[in-house]
Amino acid sequence: MPRVRTGKARHRRKVRLFRAVKGYRGGRSKLYRTAKEALVRAGAYAYAHRRLRKRDFRSLWITRLSAACRMRGLPYSRFIFGLNAANVTVNRKMMSEIAIADPEAFDKLVAIAQQHPPQAQVA
Image (cartoon, rainbow, N blue to C red; front, top):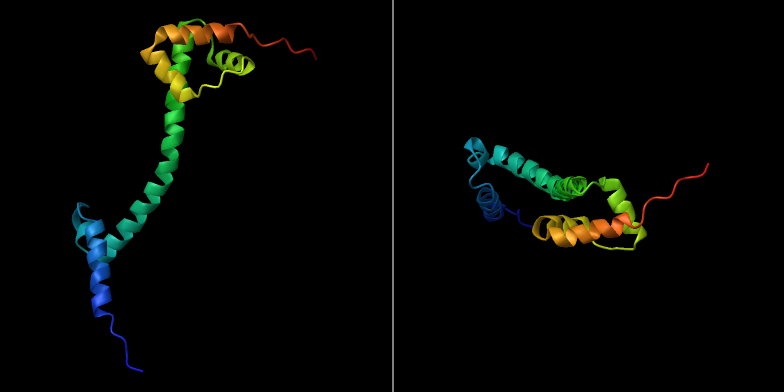
């Protein structure tokens, strides 16, 4: 059986790699080994941060809601408790958008939450 030479396949692999790292600084876009390492690391960071982005946005929405609730004299935790007790199923993203774009509608949500205060726990 004849020996297989990898010239064409290797070249194609290198071209694909260098196309992927185009725009990276210094040796990360010029040197094969460095570029390969940079691409692997970039992929790992991209994977992790796609998940972190979701946490960051949820945190932002909660911060916005907390500020909007406090302006209306209600803590965030009581607001969420009241909405859950009233079976209002609006997610935090939509509620933060409502708080910014339509304060009157948000006032109605706050009123609904205030109608369902937490009950005192009997020990």
